[in-house]
Image (tube, rainbow, N blue to C red; front, side, top):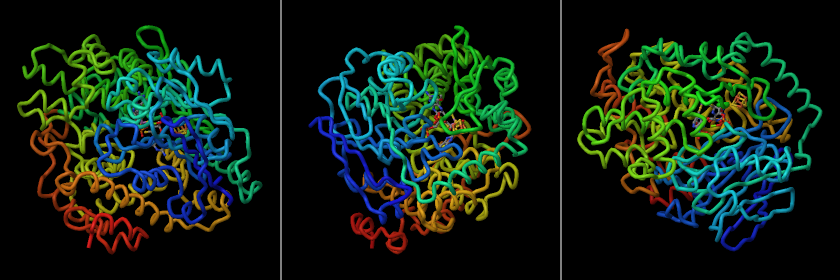
Length: 604
Ligand code: PTT
Ligand code: SF4
């Protein structure tokens, strides 16, 4: 087979045994890689009701047919498992040398189950797979532990690692790499911690089998040049994702004071221009020529890598308008291994609960000391932090009152940095995302604001589904970074050509869209299998956006219209080929080649 190695590495930590499972071209073409492989494996192998933090859960690192090849932004990997935060399917995507090394070691994916007796790490070097002692590293932050591992194994290895939050089973602990790349918001780091697994180290020295190596090399080179020639390239290099902050504030969608408002008076103190003044270096993922990890020094004089989401949630959402203070929180979250989005969301929630006297302890908006105390409490499960570590949905159940209305989450996953009072399509995007309230599947909001912001119509729904197909389906399965396309305009036409050169297969863009639908439907069915009542009532955004209008900025008075939202949700199900309760129909599942899934759920 070309393009795919055709191998999945299996590691059972209980039995201390590894094996290699091969797969054929049919499987590869049907599920592509990354999220597609992960969803299929979790559907096939996880019995319903498995405790996500038990040895039975499977932690999957999966690449795709374009990962690691000499082409733009191909150094990405998907990390997936049943989520301890949501109880449904969970995954994330991070850029790391481990992605490239895994493919060069001869595998597309590693599937880890069982639980080690003691803290361990896995060392993979081509065909050699070893379980090693990590006792001395347990309790260390990701920065120190990664330094130690790189010192032992050399700079060329890829490291996937958890911090203390993952060890402490914080339900929104991600997996980290390279001191600033993080993935797996719905608690993939906690799943790793539950297996007593501190890190996975990967070194690969083989060639990835390619159908047309010269053609791919040529296309890859042309692709890099195309990106460099784009009009927006220079500005991207200057600001990266941080350029979104000014836009979000001007568009009244910058989450402010726990998503109460969409404008922040002190936005200039944390925006991309402020970041440029403080910038000391730039980092990024392998194989990328538009590296976007902008680094500044925090208030302790240490380096921190910033992204829009991190600054939106740990800055404006908690009322903090000083970028170096935000950077301090960002750095601590990266070191301790806490998801910045969920953390900023929960800190904002607690500051609001304190303001409303729903809790006795006092936490003030914009206080870096209070924010740090809360972050540390959740990462180390100290005192009340033990509740916070379960996520904002659970915390709101403990806090009580009407706080469930302003616990900003969908399906248990905290919202990323887009306030949706005046963006009903984006509210629907959060609510129908396959892992909970994450923008990764459909960042509809920039299109929505540029076209028909206040509309509730079928066109908006169609655009949402198209974005979910491209972002949540195609990019998550190829697996490459989507930012060349979405941020600088690298055309989607490149991808079938790159796939042809890599695999030798003629895979049209339409076929990729169908694959995306297959993966989305399968994930939807995973949720349904876990939760018998799963359906329409699960596809709702936080109540705040329906009931409490914005009070500041040019869009003051705006909120989401419930009838308009309900109509869009109906059209969404219709256009997806799902029933009125949001469950894929038997016909749809059969059309997608998933009749066994329909049968397993008794869908008639
Ligand atoms: C992603 C989510 C995001 S999305 C951000 S910033 W963003 C946050 N980053 C965190 C961080 O940093 N540290 C931390 N402790 N927690 C963090 N949580 C948040 O996690 C990231 C880039 C970015 S920056 C984005 S949008 C794009 N995401 C991609 C994606 O999802 N798929 C894909 N094919 N390509 C993508 N390219 C871009 O990658 P999750 P990274 Mg991330 C420090 O993982 O779980 O998906 O949540 O991977 O290597 O850091 O690159 O404004
Ligand atoms: Fe990584 Fe940024 Fe490059 Fe994407 S654009 S591959 S996130 S450095």
